[in-house]
Every structure is written in structure tokens, then in C-alpha cells.
Image (tube, rainbow, N blue to C red):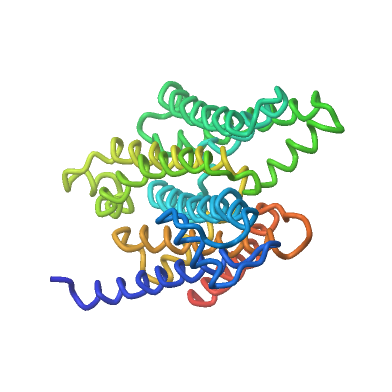
Length: 342
């Protein structure tokens, strides 16, 4: 039996689910190729049953090959960044930690830059970025275990992650320096700003498979994540191997982050802001906070991507919009927290 307090935390998650559904259908209508609710009904019927929609071939092509994959990619990306951000903040006991703390973002950025420099196609760019992101985190983990303080592995991971990120950022700068300033440099720079304009149906498995592989263990272990907020000695007295648990959750969160960056580029602030919002709505209990953050992150990035592809004639990079929205909002959160403590 759920207590009244637990039921009160479930209700916001249900409402957030309704918000996600509304954001999904709103995103289907928005775009340079306008669709009516009737058009959307027949398009979904065509996709589910194979019956002809009666619309033009261009309408089906635009919706199924361009708009719908981008909508799904935005939802998966927001969900993954919010989930990994929540896990990182819990694992490191620091609300200012973001998903790129272990070098996954910088590693994936270097991989994409190298792939673009070598004229690889879209799918290979994503794959190389994904592998570089995992390599960066693997290097961080190995160096932290080899040279860091074994009694403070968390601090060693953070410090080593900063060093590895700096090295990969230097690699990105080197690639941009040697790249053709008229063709390669603009492509690399635009990718690093973050965008889902290149999302196609083949991108979805690269996004969804790591999210399932990393997200499912995190959801199954979410009740144990609450214990990571305790001092390690107290958690260990309850029978929890904090070092192993922290390693598992960091590995899963990094897998998600690398796949997201590989497809959408560097999209900041989502993994930092959304976990704070989720905690404001349902509290800090990871059993409720992780699902709330996932649904809220998907809805948020869906709406931001709607602005990115509809506000102007050209796509606005998502990294710019998330920074413009996220930075002032984070300052507001800090101000409210200070007011509440005074």
C-alpha cells in the first residue's frame, strides 16, 4: 500500500506524462510544412496499418523521414540528459554536477570533429562520436583508479574528468585549426553547438539502445541511489557497497550521455536544470525523482526544439537556446534558495 505522501508524489509524474503527450502532438503540427489534426490522424493510420493517407507523397515523406524522427530524437535526448544529470548529482552528492563531468561530452565532441574532418557520413559521425565518448570516460576511470586517492574515488573521478575533458577540448581545437575554414570548420562548429536537424530514422537505434541499456539498470536501482546521499560509512553499514554501486550508476549514466552527444552534439544545461525542477516537484527521493526528471526532460527538449525549428527560417542551435533559457533560470533557483535560507 502506498502512503498518502507517496501518492502525492505520483500525481505530478502523471501530470508530467500528460504534458509530454501534449508536447509530442504539438511538435507534430509545428514546422515549415504545416499539418492539420485530420492530416495527422491519416498519417498515423498510414504508419500503423499501411492504409494510404490520401495526402501527397511529400507530406508522408516529410513527416515520417524528417519530422517524426526529430521529434522522437528530441524526446529521447531530453529524457537521457535529465536522467544522467539526476544520477550524477546523486552519485557525487553535488547539485551542480552535470552529465559531462567525466569527459563524455568532450570525448564525443572530438570524435565527431575527427569524423567530420575525414568526410564520414552522418551515421559514422555518430558512431565515432559515441566511441570517443566512451573512450574518454574509460580513460577517466582507469586514470582515477591508477593514480587517484583510493579512499576518495569520487573526488579522483571528478578531478581526472576535468583533466581528460581539457585534453579532448584541446584535440577539438586542433581539429578545427587544421580543418578547411570554408567547409570543415563551419560543419564542426555547428555540430558542437548542438542540433537535431540531422536526426533520421537510422539515428534512433543509436539513441534508444544505450538509453535502454543504461536507463533500465538505473531505474531498477533507483531505491539504492537514495543511500548514496548518506556518508559512505552509513551506507556500508546498511549492506551497500557504495564504490561498486557508484561505479555502476556512473557507467550507465555515461553510456546515455555519450549516445546523446553522438547524435545531437553538445546540448548543455538540460542535465543541470531539469533534475532541480524534478526535485522541486516530487522531492529528492530517487524512486520518484528519476521518472519525473525523465518525463520532464523529454517535454522540455521537445518544446525547445520546436522553437529551434520554427522560430526562424534556419534552425537555431539547441545549445544556444538551452543556455539562454537555462542560465537565467538557474540564477533564479539560486536566488530562491538563498531567500529560503535567510
